[in-house]
Image (cartoon, rainbow, N blue to C red; front, side):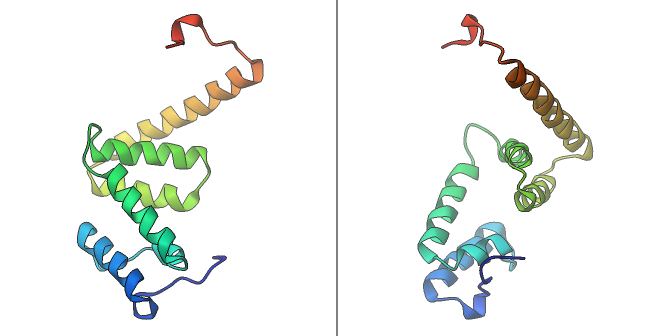
Length: 131
């Protein structure tokens, strides 16, 4: 259950509708997901987060599918169910295969395991890894 109201387009201010319109245009959809509807309770935060997401997740040195896969991994590490589902759907829409997803989950699981061991044992970082 959400801790805030979800702001639908017809109930939104002009400022929020402008962001919703930008989301719809960029994503080529009429659908506004619940994350943005929740953020619409604070229009400045909605605008800031949307602008940041567009910048970070857009084209760059890392291709957009890889960015979505990184987002999935971090969302799993942070146990954000919403982001896991949202970015998994986005990654599949950008061409991630079932095999890539399975391998991604295996890498995340292995990282959790080895991180836990290294942290539990307080293994000192090797000098060669310092930059």
